[in-house]
Amino acid sequence: MTERRVVVTGVGAMTPVGKTAPEFWNGLISGESGVRPITHFETADYPTKFAGQIEDFDSGNYFDRKEARRLDPVTQYGLIVADETIQDSKIDLDTINKDRVAVLVGTGIGGMKTFYDQSISHHEHGPRGVNPFFIPMLIPDMPAGQISIRYGFRGANFCAVSACATGSHNIGLAYDSIRYGRSDMALCGGTEAPVWEIGIAGFSSMKALSKRNDEPEKASRPFDKDRDGFVLGEGASMMFLESLESAKARGARIYGEIVGYGFSADAYHITAPDPDGNGVILAFKSALEMAGIKPEDVDHINMHGTSTPLGDIAETNSIKKVFGDHAYKINLNSTKSMTGHMLGAAGAAESVATLLAVYHGMVPPTINYETPDPECDLNYTVNEAEVRDLTYAMNNAFGFGGHNTTIVFKKFED
Image 1 (cartoon, rainbow, N blue to C red):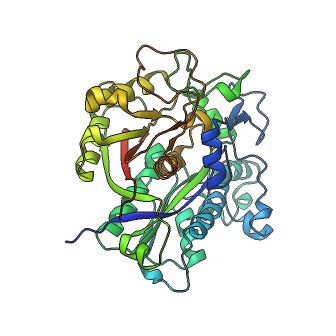
Image 2 (image 1 turned 30 degrees about the vertical axis):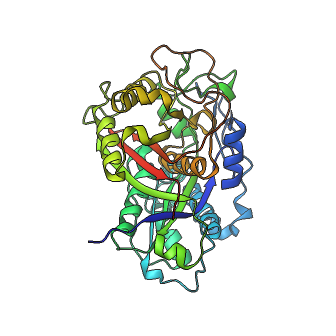
Image 3 (image 1 turned 135 degrees about the vertical axis):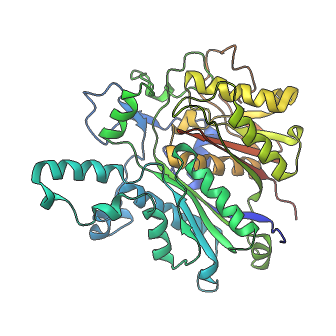
């Protein structure tokens, strides 16, 4: 089977540091924190009172009132970003074969606000209090389904769900779909809307969230010695992929090329990372092998880097084991320091950040790095963006359940 080259011709993002991909990129390069006190609900009784939110979001700017009431925020974010991504690709929807366009867009949790609201309504009013659109608004596949309905894309349509690795898994699967000729184009990524009462309560009960309520903008501090947990984030991000032949035929702008990925499992614990990093190391090695490159070819890694005491050390050690002395020459970063952890959308947003770093030749910083941790001693591109010509860059995304993903992006060369 002939393998086709796969390029990225469109990107979209709605994140705590920008509601479009250009705003997202500018926010990252500027080192802006998108973490603020929560405004979605009253937080007096919650130990963590901040998050990375989509602030000042008015669904009426995007949907009519009737449509908005039938879409959970997770699907609203997905549809908005899908539209931006398609427009950015400059694809002419009237001239393509929509039977050959795949949509692989996932969410780690699904319609959390809908589930919470309808559970309360059922408790207060019984079965008659449940919205007839409850199930379609709740299920994780609905963002992908709604996108295909809106644009008439009839190719492969589903969502991989793997917690915080969701966005990256969907990008990898879309890459394969085009690479092996099952699709010519694909819209892929992730969306998530977890910043609601039950989301904050659930992660708080796990003692996973930072409690730096006095300085929320400094709460997400990957690799810093004083990190005390991750910051919940929300939003969506996507890529438009197509075969190189398709992109060249229509004269598309090409952001970069996907050349490989690695998927693996820790097979260790439902939430904690394997301290020996065996699963992450396997993902790294698989990605390098698929891309046909050596460890010393990698210039940049956008790390999972959640700002948790154990996770940052485990990921750092895995990089050292695979990349050896070259690990100290790589520009690493964690853009979660600015966005918080967007769960099912994290891998997609950070893949877009990695791709744009390659495209623009600039690595966004890891902000809030103040006190060095002796166990995290690599170059995390701290506090300021750095100009660097990048050829190969990788993005890591790991999920509860032990899911690991690594995607390799390459500077486009015809």
